[in-house]
Amino acid sequence: MRLPVERFRTGIIFNPVLHRDGYPSVDVRAGPRYYAFVKPSDSERDYQDFASHYSRLTDGELLKLARESWDLSDAAWDALEDELDQRNLEVPEPELLPQASVPEIRNLVMLRRFRDIPEALLAKGRLEASGIECFLADEHMVRMDWLISNLLGGVKLMVDPEDFARASRILNETVSNFDEEPTDF
Image (cartoon, rainbow, N blue to C red):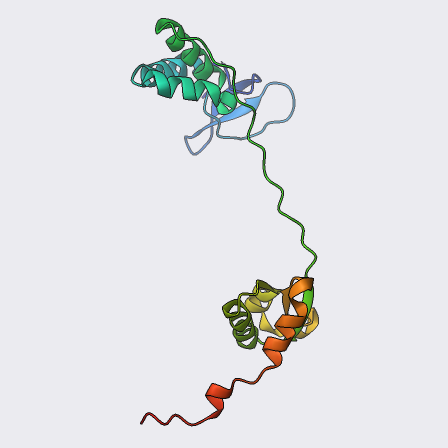
């Protein structure tokens, strides 16, 4: 069974046909047959939906939307412009597209290697309690498959170069409070 030919959002003319399951699929006129489930574009209905929504917004909300318009479709932008014109509001200059921030690259040095995660977490906790920022490299890989710990060189405790000496001294200290037997009992 053939359905009427319609123009889809992509602008390519597809010839919709009913698939044997009863779901509509499309057949590209020129070229091989491709089955895809594509919804036809109804830009007039989209425009009406946007116009209805924009009519309920305040002036401030409309102006904010116009300033941040980089994600609007053509139908949404047309409806927004018309609503701004009806309210006698000027279309503001759109803001620039938000820029993604690039994470800071830091030169960390390896302080210690640990075969097992619990030991690495104890050392990390001790350094963080002393105010030294540190990170565990390859922690998640070892969590997923602990057998590859030796292959990766273990879990690595990484610190900033300026904190290396202090962190090493802290980890080399013995914890004297835990060596003694508790006398409170």
